[in-house]
Length: 310
Image (cartoon, rainbow, N blue to C red):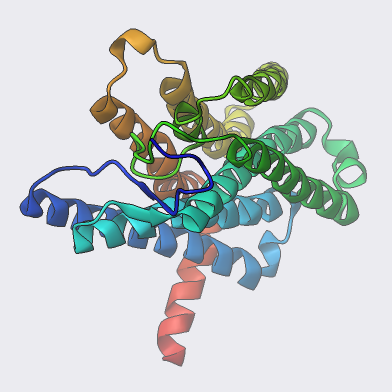
């Protein structure tokens, strides 16, 4: 048994006990991480480079790509390093940093996706008021609020979690430092404070979810009233990437945190955690590039320009 003051490191759950599978995990996670870096990096570069994409929708895409890069960079590099070294260790400070950064990026991303649904609602349902309701200053304030709220939310959870006495050892049943896994190590009833905080947060997330659903109900009603088929197709095309990202984010997160305890196991929890923490940041750029014609056109202009300069 150990208390929190004597813990200097934590032990993460390994993907496998054999060297060969460790190397397989290393190459698989490295490929996914590089794909996420490339995809999100191209979106950031393209939006920043092309002045035609300096609109609220692409400004929020830009922020989302930064959040995706931050989220996947919080967990995957350490897992890659441990697989290469055949290790399970993560320092106490490193674990605190992982919990804070992961909660920060994930909560900020969910808030941003909620704001992006409002952006699509205004663009389609109130197009004449779009520049008034979502001017450049408003967008900057909304983005700043997303990052600030994510920071404060993560700080509150991290301080509350690591202020609890930990006396159930230092082994975590996850491949990265996840807040629920830290709470399992607590031997104090004070952990109920964090449970209540999570319940309040869940209510806030549910409110955001309802807001997204209501926004898209209004969007669908407005799109179906468009007389031309081409107009309906164009309106749906601007919404589908965001709707796909929201669906992927909420579905994987719900599976991770709302699955029945009766089917819970370390291996299943690890697979599910990969689905919600690793897959979305790597897949999101692909969703944008496949469905967004303006982004594809700007990207096709950027890549030949880069090759000529080189």
